[in-house]
Amino acid sequence: RTNTYDVLGNGRPLDGYNLFTLNEMLQMATGGAIADYTEVASTGAILLVSSVWNCDLDKNIDQCNPEYGIERIDGVEGTISSGFNFRSVTYDVTKTHRLLEKYHGVRIIFICEGVAGKFDLAALSVTLGAGLAYLGIAKLITDYILEYLMPQKDTYAEYKYHHIEDGDDEQAMPLQTNLRG
Image (tube, rainbow, N blue to C red):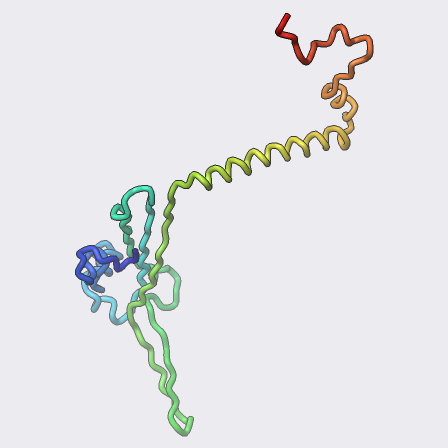
């Protein structure tokens, strides 16, 4: 789907959904303060149109509709020239005279952004498997650091390993029991 998604099924954009006039865009950007483009024709304006798509692809695709936002971004205080304008220089053939012209207009910047996600059991399994592997590696690294690099390595080894002497065999618990009696 795109911003020109055919909602009506006739191949045409829908007014107010993905088709806006310049006057409508200026009204949305200024909160109704500017109703006609002729009000900014002499100074120009810069509009930022954002189309945000946040979709849950586990649900029906028809529920994935964009949210539009329009704001005017040229009204920064302390700038030399507000609005949108640019200059063009034209030289005559003899290069003795030049004509400097300043043009004004409405510049529209479009940004399309969003996030879409869908649950995937395979991706979940891989992520969980990798997490468990990291836990195993973390244990090995921690044991190595504690056994060989720390100043208290003898104390750690004493707690970690229990040495059984030959006389301790009677006190040790059997590994297997005979269930036949």
